[in-house]
Length: 84
Image (tube, rainbow, N blue to C red; front, side, top):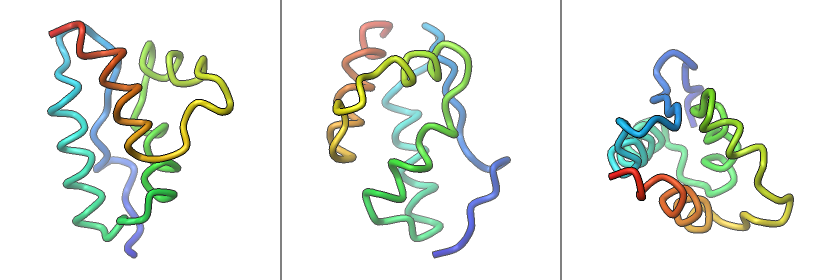
């Protein structure tokens, strides 16, 4: 597993102009290119990609809300797909 440079991370701000599906696709591509296949690696890295409203939303999630990467994607898309 290679170390991912923080400047290469895609960023999501929670704006209505952002496409959450495209963001998750870009995040998955980046994770695969750096051999971040483990769910725990993705879950640790994901909050670093969120800024402003997106990060505030994430921080408001309950402690026992996310148990898997599929949970994270589902909750994220449920929140942000309504914008599209």
